[in-house]
Image (cartoon, rainbow, N blue to C red):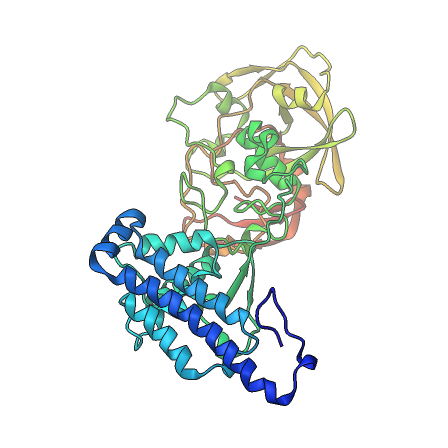
Length: 435
């Protein structure tokens, strides 16, 4: 048997008659240790010396924790503490707890000490700050604090693996919730770098319309910018911070200031569309550029037009050189719009090219469409539809104008009527058009 960690006794050298003597030696050693602690504690309990001691350390909790630490060391030195007289143990416990004004009928301190020695330093600091007005918090206070802390972490930690401790129920306290933070590195859905899409410098440099085109091309949800679902299936509680509508803030188009109608608008859009409250059918279409890649553009279907148009900025983005022509477009009121050239464009979706169209290149087709943001809160008939232009209700520029014959050939044999003063949805090769 061992007398201490540093000294051992070979039992084989002793007979059975020597065992009582060994027991007495152990008891005497333990008594001396207890007596030494008792002397130090009693001296500390003296009023003047205790005040002097506290004036130096200014923290009664430190003293109490040191006593408990010494207690644990003593128990570790002994082979089997249960072999020692229980009265000795009780005497030792009563002596140093009572001296520090911790009544033995309240054993919270022992439990609190063991809990504090196990928890994270930051959590312990928060506990100390919360109960700074008491010397030692009660076990109930610690339990309530840890329970509230664990519940807060469970509700607030995203991307965390929360696992419940599998220890026996008798040993489970509020602190037994093991919350393991797993930090998964971000991977940008746009450039594949190690950051989120909302922190992507390349994506943020793009204009709002370019971001909308990217989201449409990559089939992202317009509300959370994730590719795992579409807008109609988005469960996110977050909406645009600017207008509170269901789209991402990065895809928000600013509402334009009221302005005088541009003569070019009337020149290119038919008379039936002069009423500015009319919703014109728009779609995000794909156009093949000079290098063979597909680019996204916002197109307007004009059932009163006989020609197709494309803006100069869209032609520049595609890398085309327009064929020069000497002609002008005549519209309402004999307004004339100059054409800077003609180009041939392959127009379709991300999976297929449907048309090769001869298009007139013009500086500007029309003003932003719609001219003001629409209130669609009552349009329940379109809530579950995959729209050809998810941003149809937000004012934005038009890159292409597609003529009546293209509109007719793009429409599928399906439509859904809205209520009074609401648009009809037409299914098309680009998604549902609203008109």
